[in-house]
Length: 262
Image (tube, rainbow, N blue to C red):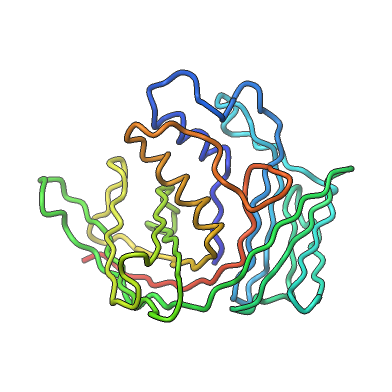
């Protein structure tokens, strides 16, 4: 199951996370209409998807202009070529294509006279062992945090992102971690939703664990740090796409678990 967070929503998170009226590097007024590429391929047999759109002003949060008519091609390190077809405005799909862990993939996106390229290596699969709901130790509010458990491989350098769904609705919080301090260990991580999200008895919870390469991890880690605020000045996140555009291209692995909260 692929997940998709509109880039303009992330820009809104940046703005909401700070009290500054002017956002350094992300020039919301000046950069309206810039290309956004959000591309993922994964190790499942679901269709692979690359989305092209344009970023928008904060006041136009419900209108994300799609970019149609592009040429989108993905190649693996054995020079096999996969052409993505536009199935709806700005959405490009390859149906008969499953990513293989360990392979390196490149993409080429042609928009009018401009060509954009990126490379991403799909890591080996790390499986999400289990998830659990737990009440916070402090506070009287009847809500839950979600805890994830997995075994980190000791012979690999790994980076992960966790995506939380409550009753099939994706929570927009960003959780990105690496194994710098727990390489080869049995790991547990607590996912704490923001204050406006309550997880209560009867809720259906699903967590997707996404494995990614280092460059894509830097993108998501940057967004996580900036959306959390904590005095960090928002800036354009690092991308693996050249020449620079908003977004990323990720060859990634997926593992997921679901529970019903007691």
